[in-house]
Length: 360
Ligand SMILES: [Fe+2]
Image 1 (cartoon, helix red, strand yellow):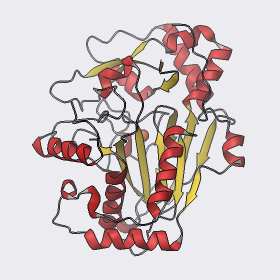
Image 2 (cartoon, helix red, strand yellow):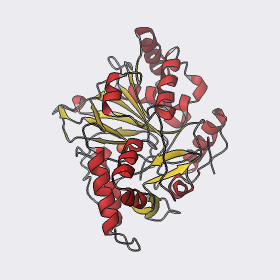
Image 3 (tube, protein in one colour):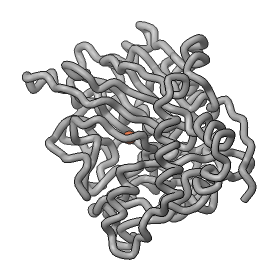
Image 4 (cartoon, helix red, strand yellow):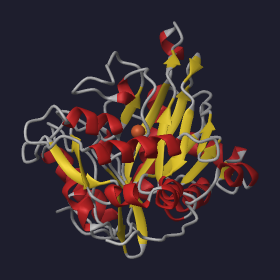
C-alpha cells in the first residue's frame, strides 16, 4: 500500500485544541435538572440495566447538546467534553443509570471485558496493569497510549482521585502525519499486521490474540489502533511471531511522537464531566493516581462503549476484532466469558430501537 495522505479535523495540534474550545460543551441548569430528574425517576435498584428502554427516558433539552458533542467526537476533532452532568445529589448508581440512559439514546452499548459487562466502573480494584490478564481500568497505574475496542467511548467522572489520574489524548491522525513525514519506512511497517493479546478475555469462539495493523484506510478515512501493553503480552502467546526490529523501532517512534508537547493534550476530568472519544482517530492514556482513603471519595468513572447508528465503514483489517465492518452495524467490544442470551436480547432490541440491522 502506498502511504495514505489524509487530512481530517481530527489531525489537530495541541495549540489548536487549546485555542478553539468548540469541542467543549456545557449543560445549563435546566438541562442538568431534567437529566437528574429523568435518572432519579427511573432508578430502581432491583431493575437490571438491560431492562431499560431507549424511549422510556425523556432526557429533555440536554439531548441536543449531547448530540452535538457525540457528533464532534465522531466526525470532528475526535474528542468532546460535556461539562455539567448532574453530580451533586446523585448517588453512584443513579449517576451510572444516567450514563446508561444517555448511551441508550446514542448507540448500542458494547460488552467491555471478561465479565461481559456493558458499563464499566473505572476504579482501582487491585489489578496489575502489566500482568498477562491485566486491565488498566481496574488499576491505579499510569497507562500506555491505547485505543479502546469500540467506535465511541464515553467516560463520565463521578469522583476524581486525590492526586494524579490526569487524562492524556493524542490524535492518531496527527501521529500518522509525523511518522510518515519523518520515517516513511517505519510508516510502511505501521500498515502491516501486529499481534494483540486479548489478555485472556476472549470469547469461546475467539483466538487468544488477533492481527491488526496500526493504521489502515477505508473510504478515504484513516483509522488508527495501538496498545503497547497488549502487543507486549501477545509476545508470550504460542503462535505469535516475535516482533521484528523494524516493528520495535516503529512503535518506539510512534510512542515518542504521541508524547510530544504539541501532540499530547492533557486535561483533568472533574466530577460531572463526560468525555467522548472516537477510538479510530484518538489515542488515550492517563497518569498514575493516588486514591482517597474514604470509600465514598475514591476515584470512579463510568465507561460506556458504543456502536452508534451513523458509524462509517471500517477497514477490512479491523474485521477480526470488530466482527463486523459494515457502516451502522453493531460491532466492536469484548464479548468476554458471559455473553449470554440476555446480552444478545438486549443488543437485538436496542439495535431495532435505533433502526440498526440485527447484530451478526
Ligand atoms: Fe482506555
